[in-house]
Amino acid sequence: MALVQWRPRGSLDVRDEINRVFGSFLPDFPWRGDELEGAWVPKVDISETNGDLIVAADLPGLNREDVSIRIENNVLTLKGEKKHEEEKEGTNYYRVERCCGKFTRSFALPNTVDANKVKATFKDGVLTVTLAKTEVAKGKEIPIAVE
Image (cartoon, rainbow, N blue to C red; front, side, top):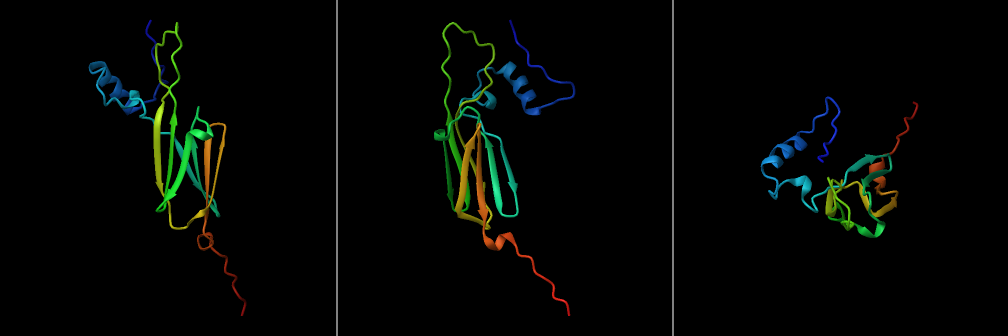
C-alpha cells in the first residue's frame, strides 16, 4: 500500500517538488536534504519590545537538557540534538517525516544587547531566549520646555 501526502489545492512548495522529482530518479542520492539524518533546522521567531530582543525556537520532542545556549562575540548560538526514536519490532513504517539529529542556529546580535542580562526558558517544546537591551538602546523621552 502506498501512502500519498495530501496537498491542498493551490499549495506549492518548490523544494518539496524538486525533492519529489529528483527522489524518483535518485532515491539513494545523499543530498536529498529532507531525508538526511541530522539535517533539520528548528523554526525560530525573533521579535523586539522596547526593552528586549526575544528569540523563540520550536524544539518539539526535546528536553531542556538537550539544548545549549551560548553568546560569544555578539553571536547567539543555539545547539542541540533530537534523539532518534527506536523502531518498534513488528511495526511497518510507510513514511517517516519527523526529523532527528543535531542542529545549530546562530544569530548575529546588535550591539544594543546586554549579554550579561539574558534569560532563557523552556516550556512545551518552545525555547524562549530574552536578551535585554542596554539602557542607551531603550531610548529616552526628551521633554520640551515651554518658553
